[in-house]
Length: 428
Length: 136
Image 1 (cartoon, rainbow over the protein chains, first blue to last red):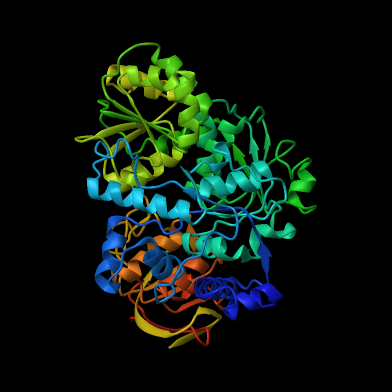
Image 2 (image 1 turned 90 degrees about the vertical axis):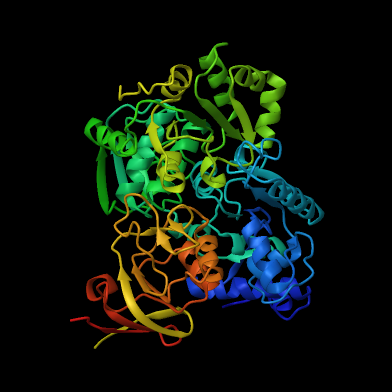
């Protein structure tokens, strides 16, 4: 690898032992990728030093120390020894976590786990990390600019960052983002490079894509069809707001490994089809019509059998402020018969609180939570057998993570299920 | 014995029975890191564990928790013995590095065509060599 002077200095220990170990890990990672150099980054989204009780206790037992610094050294940096961890060298935010600190008991978490999370957050703050606790940092105050080199985790945020904003990030992991937090470096590979960002697959849409459910289904279809390649979406598709992109991106990164998509005439690197494709012809052209739409709907409802719903989960990826207003409007002052949990970031929740949306939703009998979701926390209301979801991503993960049945439909279908206890969704 | 040559991305040697899939694997939400079992409901390896097997697969997909999930299998002693894969991604590069098992990619023949589940496979991550002894 070609190392810059500051990188060599960190490898030689000039910035202290933790930065040295962070650079060593980044070099192992960059060499595995075949990267030739690093880029500088000052926008990192990760989960530095966070630990479940399992991880904390593992290191208490095996290394005699389960503190933030121990977990950060031994696990995040894979350093083999516990080191003093300096503050973040680059802007770094913490993504989603394990529980809502207010509603932890409803999530089935122990007081011990909750107190451990509070300690982790205090340590994060001391290390200069912004505690956003969300899978949607772009809705909570971390909005990079076009072309900016980032080091983000969270597949749905990564695809948003590349596709919608035109900033540049690979799907980073816990260890690489924590190492970047100390060094401000990430391998110059993949989506950091212009030539890597062109589409290889063309998707022609010839059926209307309107609701959040529709955008999720289109994404789920594309992810399954192109796997980890880059699609350019063309055809009967218009009017995507940030909410639609949030659901499209989350779905393409669940059924497949898509880290960037283009939409002809819409996304920043796809002013024309030719630009999106980098002047080449697509390797594969795929149609998405009403038949494909029907099939993906059936796939996403394959785990739904019993129409008696006992849990509705909204907010995957974390709900936007517009979704709060929509849910409050759909509930319309009525009481729900099932459990309804709605997940969001602390930033969006504070706006929803001030706007009165949270109260309207809670008055119906729902619980608004931050930081996590049912899949991340592996938590559903006690006794849940059948869930109803409006997120293709959540329906992909939740049955596997928790063993519940799950229905997939529009937000309206989900609210109807919450109000009646029955699933009545169908493809319209 | 069949010998495949490629690029080692994590050093070391390991050998054992192969577990082969033609489907990419999700880390977080796709495997149970406590047991090394694939839990993705529609995956062809659903319910099977890669613990103490040489995992032969196209590559990684899904959540950015991929490296964390495989890193955890190292702690729970449920990690695969080695990884042989085709498609390089950041998920798999970082995941292999922190799982600290021998890993080889860019082989001169498609390992998914050559290796079948149950074959005995020796992975040399230092030299980038995979030796396959067919079960029958």
